[in-house]
Length: 118
Image (cartoon, rainbow, N blue to C red; front, side, top):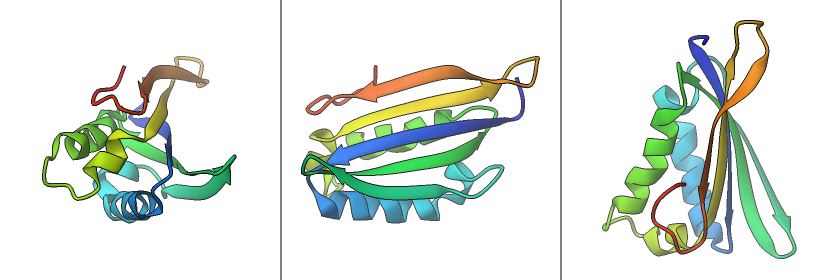
């Protein structure tokens, strides 16, 4: 395992304010989302549902990124918590294997209405 893990997360939501807030928060969390390089955030819409996709790097793993989302979900005072709960969040974490190839080390999923990742 290398000391830099690559991460990807996609957040689907009908709440543009949530996506804008998450984009800002992720951009400002340099220690969580940009360990070995810049954070790349893309925005889009499919079939009327807006989303942001984030490609990022983490130190050894992307656990701090997954904790970032879990902490927001748990925060009863987060003004966009209900929208976050109703969003779909899918993520992947890639680590280098002994051959120098990237392999999926972890997948996370939070379906709309769920409070935890599976």
